[in-house]
Length: 558
View (tube, rainbow, N blue to C red):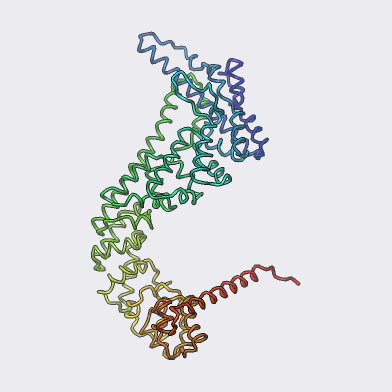
């Protein structure tokens, strides 16, 4: 229904103040600020629906209060429901001015697009007092918050002065942060920032991730504090100064959504339309409004309690089955761990202990290093173990291999492991099991990108390539361009050393300074080799840049 056509608006004054929220009028105001007509029309309807719903709820509450007072005093309640349609007082109506609201926002540097986004997710701002005036003081001494107050507190103070956001970035946050310009929302966001700082996050690190900042500022500080209490409890033992960085990372969104969810938008959406379309004198509408207002909080609380039950259950299994005592490292790399299927967690930990022979200490280190393992399918893990045994990896070596390189259990046998084994056999490696035991990550290397290019280079610089690679399998773990070629080129081009006679492990197993002094026999504590590496690196970067530029040039057409 249109506001101008609302039959409940009786007085001329009341109709005048209420008509300013007409969807078409709001839309025209936004279009004048450069907002596209379709978007402006949508925002206008949102604002109009919110105002209608708010007025309807106000009338219902007033009617119920008066009815209850009459019941308590023993006065008979009339069947007349006209009181529910009473208009708002002129004094109260004079506080509402959407033109002033839009004007204040523009004075603070917000564009039409910014204002449209803000009114879309927080239409209650359309009915907030716009400017701070001395008459704001009430008889109770309480000061009414105005839009100017919240802009100063949230936009200028929090986003600008505290988080040091550029004006452009601060406006982006406002556009996607529901409620930030309300008195409660600005105070809540300020508390969230203070809490995160106390937990080890700097204001610059909080502001750095601008995409997730609006979501963080929209969360309840009380719910975040409850999560902090849980994470720092004796069950998980996460230090307070480590919790802030954990909560700030994008991967923690699932955990925060589970136990510190944001509230639904202020408007009631379709329910608003249903309520305003109904006859406001119908007492059934009263229960519609009240039940709708309660159901969101009830469902939200249920979701929070379910989230904590899930986290507690997973933590308990990891303590009992895997001997995990400190969850800091796990949550820092994989916050999703608390929401992994608990049955799968039990299956994975039991299999690794009972079938593979890993101790609790082995399992704890493995999971802390590679917590995504808990998401793996036990059948797939079993197939990998069977494959390792089939290539003659000693079963007694499996726990140490998996403890040091748990990512092995996430590889694909056919796509990753089989091609590597075939390549190793092709270059003459006979004892594949021993080779893999000495270099477990080799099963995850790419044959075309890693193994074959390194093998071809080794054949060029070593007379005993097969002997060298079987004696020193770790050769395949070093970067080809940055380490292997760099050192061999230095020995050959700068030091004039016959590289075919130098053992591969001598060339690679030392750090840069020890390589320069022990193998290249430099007496400058590695300065010459460091300069060579820098020059070669700059040359390689320049070559790659030129190659990329050539690829970007449009091809000539005949």
